[in-house]
Image (tube, rainbow, N blue to C red):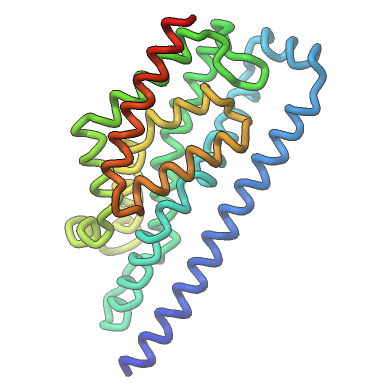
Length: 257
């Protein structure tokens, strides 16, 4: 019986992992298409788009872009937590407990990052309205760039950052403290865990305006850094070292600006 259960868990893990890979791949494919469309736009067309006031459709399109980008960037670093949740859920079901599917947990995680995406879209709208963004969604002001770098660097040293990072790095501890039953419980757990991840990384996402929201190499670099922070044994040290570098870099940009 135990062997059968382990075999089922391995099968479920494979299905969940394949699904996460597929979702992440689709997100990156969507971003690649958007980046190609923006890169192929004419200079005159981008200039007009820059000064044209946003409509509700524009805001919705940017919100979708941010939400998809967060899925592509953050799902890989959440994969260990999701796989552990799937395994625990399967074992609980084998003992007769009716628990929510892993999909509800992932949906809650996406809800948390979608809320962040709404705030990021609002920030982009404000920066665009103040003519502080280039057509490729890069900060057009050295002072904005410097403040984003310094802000991200300082946050890397705050207790809130490290408390959220610790929860992201400790899936077993999180599940033991936060376990809830049912579909609603799974959704709440996903939102809860997603909130920790947002608390860990939200300021880092502001750096997208430094290197370019549609610069896929820059987006991938930030996603890789988040992955190291959350999964590497030296994640906390990495956060502090990066924070110091960001502060120094931001200060240099402001002074030179």
